[in-house]
Length: 144
Image 1 (cartoon, rainbow, N blue to C red):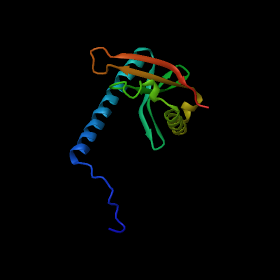
Image 2: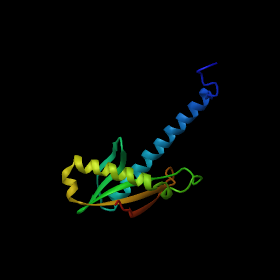
Image 3: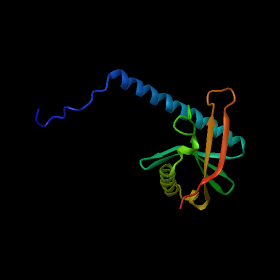
Image 4: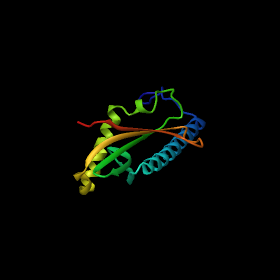
């Protein structure tokens, strides 16, 4: 048939439903990890200012303040290390998106722009365990 793509694959409805369920489960895992990370940082004396600052160009999981330092926090977790650990997933592209979102945050809240900015990563492991493991990596990356 001229003009028609006859090589297109049809994805079974069950497969689409499975992918959607996996996406919901992943989002739930992320929200739980962010809550654990926020509680952890509060217990270390930080004040959480913003959660889930999302913009088209990027997102920030947590924004915290420690005296005169604005701390932009990327929260990472993985249900398995099959595709690399959580820290490896904060690649250069992710760092750039976080930096862009930070620039937008500082533009929206000019008083925050007076503070020194630091980029941290908090890794939450065993999210659903009684005592999840939390690793806080201060100044995990710099933005040039």
